[in-house]
Length: 321
Image 1 (cartoon, rainbow, N blue to C red):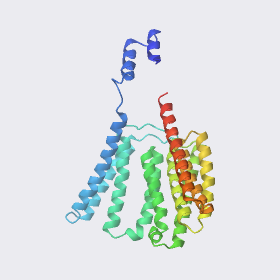
Image 2 (cartoon, one colour):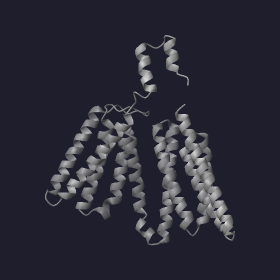
Image 3 (cartoon, rainbow, N blue to C red):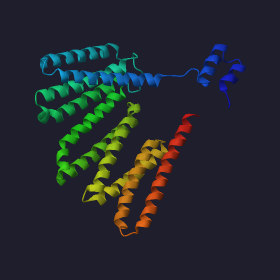
Image 4 (cartoon, rainbow, N blue to C red):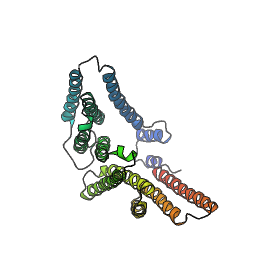
């Protein structure tokens, strides 16, 4: 196998120390633990916020509620003091964290905000009256923090809170009780919010604003859209409309993502389109013999799995080139 660093060393371009350093990387004597350390830090932040919530729950009857809220607000103040002290000026392009711990402190602050809101709503019996608006306020705050301080983890929390706001407003409880007016609103809201998130990603890419956020918006948006429309075509009375809509959107997503080499989105479109097509086929050829159905299912599923594994295999090969 060709070793460019050895060739450069023989040509005198690399020094002995540089060559030995690259050789250690090539032979895996030296390797990066950046991903492992980041994962441990993120897990530590999650465990810390979970532990704070658990301690509050255990001592809820022993410590004054206002004192607990004051302690959490004090922690939150310390977090945002740290953020303001070390934050870089806003930029539309991707920025590196100003300190090694900046991203984790910001994530801790965002999770602490959720803890404070949840505690106040539950303790003062405000869940029914303010849960929707607290979700919306949390989403707006997290969107600001994500864009201002360039944090994709907080962006994911913002999108989740935004989707939760719309999900609560269309009464998912009624969905489980088969109130079909509410079901229709729930499906349609999920479809609209999903398309809105995808559209936001398109606008960001077109305007060259935080282009590294595009994947997060489109990933959440496509997942929400396809889950909503697939549930509609399986359970709704007018499922045919949703089935054809799913096929058209799936084809568009698959073709567009294939051209852009965004293979995850291509898989989303392929799977959703396959489910919608199969649902229509069941309606058109419901009298088809069982044996033919088995052949179709085995052949189509086998082809779909082969396609997905091929894409994953090619992706891995490209990463090692």
